[in-house]
Structure formats: C-alpha cells, structure tokens
Length: 102
Image 1 (spheres, helix red, strand yellow):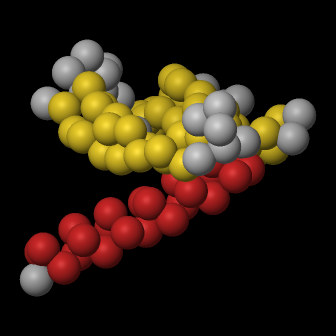
Image 2: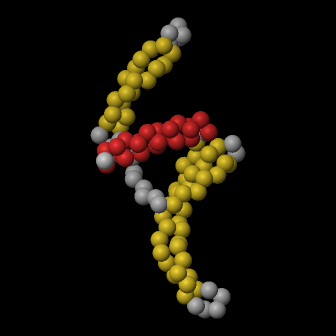
Image 3: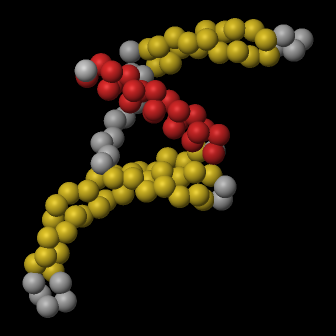
C-alpha cells in the first residue's frame, strides 16, 4: 500500500514548489512492543522497545519467584525535533482511534 502526500521543496531560484511524495509501505517489517525505554544519547532521543511477559526467576535461596521478563529488542534514534513531530502525530492518531471506537 502506498500513500501520496505533497512535499514542499525549494528550487534553485528559491521558489517553493509542491512535489508529490509517494510513501511505499509494502516492505516495512513490523515489530510488536509493549515496553519502552527512552533516553538522550549524544543529544539524540533514543527509544528502546521490546516485549515484557510474566516469567519466573530463582532467588538467592533457590526459590522460584514470579517476575516480568523484559527484552528490549530494537532502538529508534532521532533528533529532538523529529521526536516532537512523532509525539504530535501519535497524539493525533490515538485521538482518531478513540473517536472511531466510540
């Protein structure tokens, strides 16, 4: 599935020109995540994500204890400006989802 949008670019004469931008979503791998960690790394925003699930661990006395196992599997790194845009778009998307669910 592709999506077409308009992208403003500036030509050599410094005039703004609208060019179509085609987004191709056909080959994007999909990850599932239910746990996230955010950090600032060298002035960039890093979002590590993965899955958590109930598990058991052995305590120092040899007893099994219930725990949540967390496996951070991937990391997304972006500029603070990109992170702000992502935050805004996620908010809009969640609002649309909530309105559609009513």
